[in-house]
Length: 296
Image (cartoon, rainbow, N blue to C red):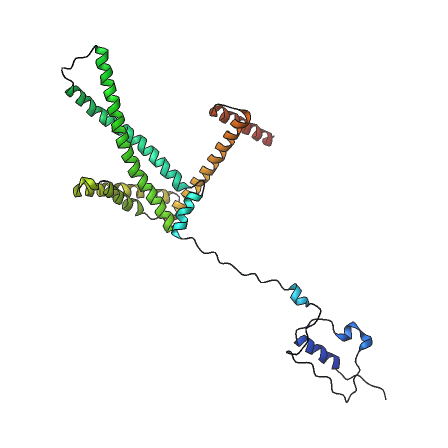
């Protein structure tokens, strides 16, 4: 009697292996000579349970092709103090440069105004206190008068300039750093901070003097806020977005200026140029020559 292959016997075996998740080649496909021929009355062998099934020696194709899962690291936003500290870690930060510019300009303006005011008072005081004093010669009298005026001009100028620089620099410093800390610019920063700074620095003048300084600070701060609002209206953006845009453009100009200064310094060191203006002129000529070559 000829043995016959039971129908769907091999397909049942392959189906069990696929159900177990093993994607290796079946016995029927790899070696037809070793095909198992079962009697019609013989029950097919029961596949092993998933727990007791031996691990295949060959690697699974799905395991090789499947991508590796990489743990995603969530970036935590910076805190306010970290944003403030980042100002001093950057090389071209708007907050530092603006504060230094305001301090220099305020000192220069206060020096000139205070010196001129002190000179007028010094001239009157000198003429009052030196009536009837004898000098060696008319030129000696003029010389003493000029020396006294220069000393009073410098004294009044340095005092007023230092006060103006301290007050103006404190307002700009606090405004920019509060903006960095809160990561947002608001219109009330200027009047509020100006009033606080004015009240603190004029505290020795008494309550009335402090209130006058607070009023002056609020009025000057509102003027600055109006300027900011006009700038925001000109570019058709909110105040906060206008501040961010101004900061971005300002820092771009700072970076370009720093690169230009670096090129000028490098040219001076390479070609032993003493005068900086000469190096600037030569570097501009070199850039124009390069542009002419590219245009051709």
